[in-house]
Length: 164
Image 1 (cartoon, rainbow, N blue to C red):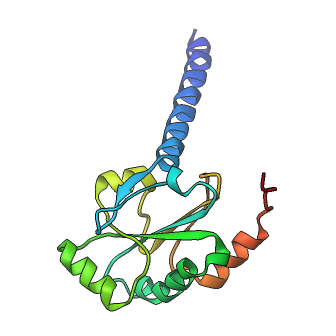
Image 2 (cartoon, one colour):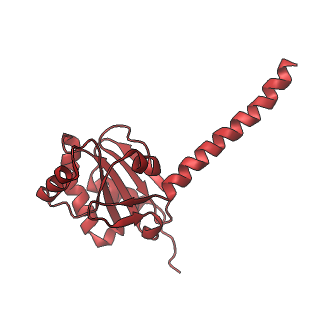
Image 3 (cartoon, helix red, strand yellow):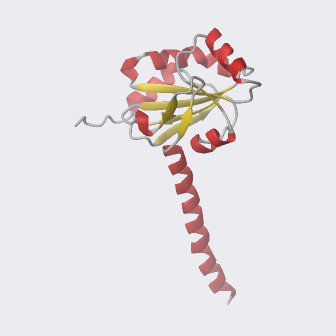
């Protein structure tokens, strides 16, 4: 009798795990967030582009080191890539926007809230970066600083789809 219970429980547990994994992926695939300028951003709105979402904080040295590379990635139209910065652990919107302005950040900045984080993915340390492919699927993540070269190399290594 105990054997039957274990066999019956396992498929239910496995199905629950798959549902959890599926729901967390669909949340990331459908994020809808608003930046500090009041502009809405959704992953669906960037269909056909790579989207890099970067969690950062004003007090985080590795975060600050990667900002020039993120600016360059966002500016380079050849990359077909959009960068979105998500500020974590801040005192006020003004603190974040003044800081971003002082660094000449040219990509959208979103104030990180639990709702925003739940839509994109967990903050596992700072910086944490998620990369979504042009089809809207999360294909890479990194905890720790990234470089422009590493992102460009990763994108170049992916098979390109034929344009219709």
